[in-house]
Length: 481
Image 1 (cartoon, rainbow, N blue to C red):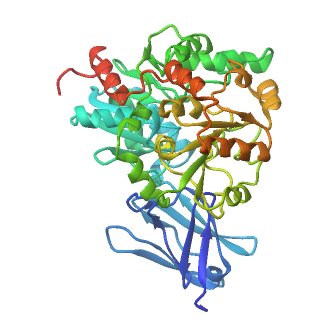
Image 2 (cartoon, rainbow, N blue to C red; image 1 turned 60 degrees about the vertical axis):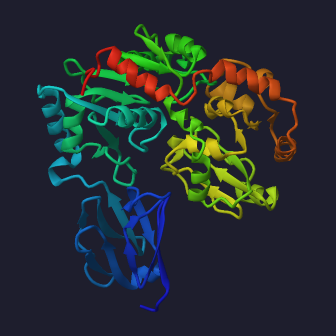
Image 3 (cartoon, one colour; image 1 turned 135 degrees about the vertical axis):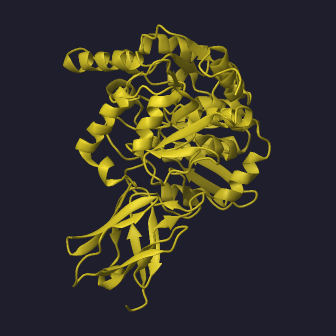
């Protein structure tokens, strides 16, 4: 080796090694060492000559040599991941996969486990099975409810469904990798399943089980049946929505406005609990903002601009209409631009890199980011409703407003007429709007207050506790531990 640093680069993570050696556990956003996100990592040229890949855990390190001229290494096994190296296009690719056992991997193995799951008739346990954004996080509304459970019912087990072991899981909870034997078993025996998106086709209700669908935001854009089009596509959408809705025993709503829309969008005949959003309980924690700023490395006194666009149905990656790296530089000293892609863009593209810019797409909690932001820049994201609870200014950057509202989704109300902040379409207009917000211009103060009263009247720090009380009152969880 020539002593040069080596690089393993993936979609949302990169690992710098030396002498061709890489440590495959990473600490991100203050977490304990976790696996790298599953996927492929291209190894830099320094690593392609010779070197080693090392998995460091609680036990002795596991390592194997990599030589391009010789055999590629056998698969590395670790409690948090499986890793292998493959030659491709004249280089080397490191593949990270979830730590499933051999008899849990592949379609045939999953069908066997699913059949066992469907036959499982064991008694239910005092436990909740939680899933957020298809296992990509342990935050959002399921996270807020889990925090309330941990505080008031520590004897109730909390099982977190995670896509792999790169996802941090709160202390005291159990991480279950999707598709593992333990994952299937917990799905069958937990008294309550708490999710914020669809359960997908493999779910089967077991006797006396209950499902709480928390959803993941108050809506501007049309949902489900309200956006189903005519023809075959519309029919398929309606059938899928109706099948999914039948799996829910109750649906959580942030406010009365959302509850009314859920009734039509999902033809929901069952109860809709208006409790406020547990994910926003963090707003009532006075010391949390300072902790998050330190965790993110935000300089003292810096003004934080949070850019958080929603995803687009016609693309996989986050939109960038302003050249975000350049835009962050134009904000000038004393500013930090936080860039937050939607959960549906998490596994695509690369983190944006720039001066005074921090890509926080992989940061676990959106509520933390809203808490530390001095101003929010969004487009059609539900974050606009959550941020209303903070009373801080918003700017709506919508250069594709006509295309999005007419061709992709459609809205429940006129954003231009009702937005609690300026709606702009160019980078120049965006700069002007941010400067006005920094000066404390009062133009939209009254409308922000109206939004806070309309959309977040129950986001008072106790939403999670109210949900737990409702779970007990409805008999979904036993009254006593």
